[in-house]
Image (cartoon, rainbow, N blue to C red; front, side, top):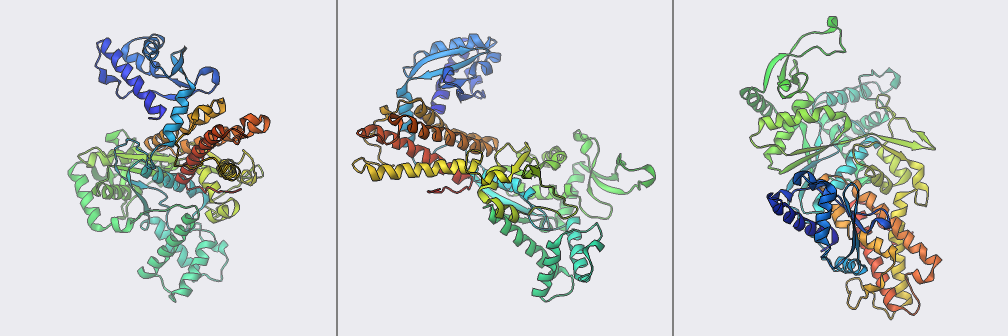
Amino acid sequence: MLYQEYLRNELEIILKKIFSENGLNKNLSNNLNFSIDISPRKEFGDLSSNIAMVACKILKLSPIRLAEEIVNQLNKNKMILKLEIVKPGFINFFFKSLFWQNQLQEFLDLPEKFDYKIKSRKICLEYVSANPTGQMHIGHARGAILGDSLFSILCEVGHKVTGEYYINDAGEQINKLIETVKFHLTNTRRDEDDMPNTLYPGDYLKNLTKKIFKKEKINVLNEKSKKIIIENILNDIKADLELINVVHQSFVSEKEISSLQNIEKLKKKLLEMKLAYYGFQEKPKNIEEKDWIKKKHFLFRSKKFGDDSDRALIKPNGSLTYFMSDILYHQNKISRKFDLMINIWGVDHFGYVKRLKNVLNALNKENVNLEIKLTSLVNLLKKNKQIKMSKRSGNLITMNEVVSEVGSDAIRYMMISRNADKKIDFDLDVFFQKNKENPVFYIQYAYARCMSIIQIVKEKRKEISIDEKNTDSLKLNKLILEEEKLIIKHICSFYDIIKNSAIHYEPHRISAYLYDLAKIFHNYWSIGNIDVKKRILIENDDDTTRARTYLVFAVKKVLNKGLSLLKIKCPNKM
């Protein structure tokens, strides 16, 4: 049992006992969200926990008093060297070297498929869902990679996940697309300066129009040609996503879901449940009274759920709002019996989150399990200057351009380098550097260094049995350096990092972890340049060489697994 699970179990047993002794139901301790962390400095011990500060309120004890009771029980543990209580109530754990050596053995002996002890759920994970009205630009990359990384992580811990793309192939944006194509089709010799600002700018649709109508030998816009245009754009989007290794298992059409039958069925249900009505919208604050024309809309009673106004579902001309389309789509997902729906949206959709959850919970008998992750902005930087992008002018940096510049590994890492709600400054120049400032190089180089070390030991010390799957007669008691203990602590927390990334839907936990592991491993390797006794390959000491090589095996295994989950390459040489 790895230390996170082991220590958590020990602490929970002690806590249940203390709860019982204080006349409380011991089960109250079951869902306490306390942490066990690697201590940031050696003098603070190996690990630290805030359990006393989390549980003290229920027990009506001071954090220090509760920490003292916990420590009194923990002192019986023979693997613990020392325990310290630090204000306001942290408990610092100092373990014997044997504990960490045993932990590495546990890690090396783990089966290929780790048991995360998470109940499997059927999940619909929707990401990207960019309008099929043009090329993928770098702004789309963050949600795409967050979603795709989450897909890998959720599958890893045992969930059954469908990665889904919702094709917005109906509504105003498609009308605008068709009008843009019509302009290019009928104005082949005119300058784009003549294009109305209500259309999509840029060369992409201009060139696509020429290509499609030449290839398909059609010169009129009808339903068939409209379908061909959308299919071509969608194929280009899929090709762009492939550049950054983003895939989906399901593509769902808004046009198909928004059938007249589905619309009428939803309208009827909303009216029967008194959740919607035909009425007039309140005048927007930014419109003058003289410019406001009152027209009847089909409205959701959003104010009933705390919103500041009732929201339009169907416009006076009969067209659907985005809100109505989203309800139809999510009702479709609910009909497919998913245990959980996760949406990756841009931060500009913030206002829709509560509104959508309210209407779905009102429409359905069972509480709808919907999680929405909002992604913040990405700023592209080059030569310390921000690269300006404008959707209005068509001046957008395409996915293809950035992949050509720095490669898919750099993009994938950067887009999950921070929590989704934090802004990212993506400095392209950083990824041409070959040092720790370039996180992708730094982590990949750690992996390549592991491969190199293992190869050198195998070549130079053929008499030593170096087989990753055979740990017989492995003398891990030779691993006594502080640097070795620190590596063991990190690698043995790896699966807990993955588990928490899945629970909180936060891939950045893994990217940050991999960088930290690479850093301490590079440091471990470099101390051998200062002190030959601390090198991995030790002359005339087979047991230490073998033990240290297996530590390298463990680091390699973690880096390989972590990078693979994030779909970043693991180069054997650099």
